[in-house]
Image 1 (spheres, one colour):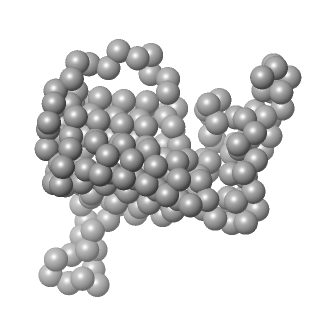
Image 2: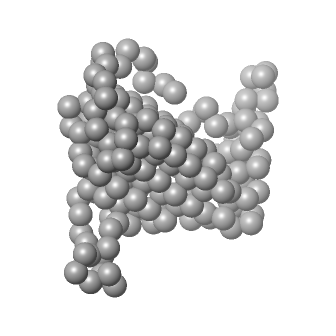
Length: 181
């Protein structure tokens, strides 16, 4: 892609996503996201690009200002930020991932419980179809395998989680990438 074309896409993207600063998403695909999100109104209040099949609830309570990939950019995600979600740099959210920060009270289903926010530290990777539930904190470089359901925190990092409920299946060396995804 030429420098001129990149500047055109970047300028066009900044018009619709002024607070989102990530050149990974500045290309012709952004036109589809702008059409579904800003023109048709699907996830209109979300200030970063979101796939039209994904659902983002309470985007104002999702801390996404760290240069990470946009949660919900992949198809079929369900991201509920009503109890806060904090996402650090280099986090990847795959397709069909659910991040659910709010849970019902077990004594009265009409009430919600106030849990801690979900915190995803640097370089976490949530693979296809995984689910992270309320109050979970994942340490740096934690990989959640496809289909896993994370019900408790794993602060140590440098590990792979799998299963339902998720448990550590492997420890891995520290992340060696440059922080860009």
